Image 1 (cartoon, rainbow, N blue to C red):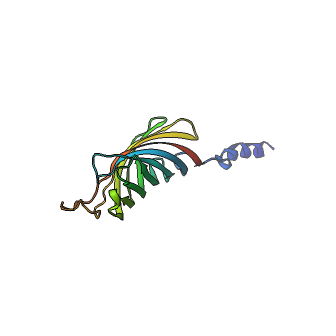
Image 2: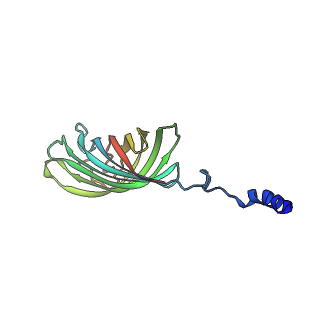
Image 3: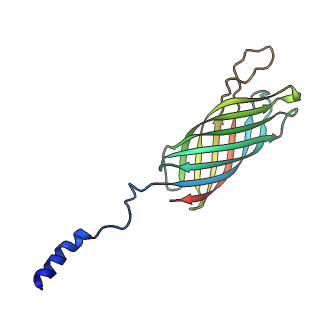
Length: 183
């Protein structure tokens, strides 16, 4: 009896294991969806700025790396009917993290659409968009964001009579997001 008790006492800790994976190895999946207000300089008529609404989603692959997709519709405050739409996706990297503040850098690619002023034309162009900003988590489910993007549309036409350097719309966005998935 005492030998059995001694064997159980010695082998019991070996048989027991933790119920949860260590956080260093656990997969970090988050899905945030949000809406934003944007103010952009469209680059075709530098004196004007376009305002509009947008939507974005961030899917975290790790604590520092995510995939971001965004759609933006700049249809307000236009000069002579000019509008822009942006459809972009790409990697987003969190540089640092302080409790609830996450500065980030991103590089998105996709499609930019421009309705030129005075109905002189309409076009869809390949777009690259380096940018960055800060996400601030208000709670486990809600976050706000401030963001800047500098887009490069290399194949967009120039103003007639000028060399074609493409277009470089750029601007700021502020938004709010809700965490749909957290694991």
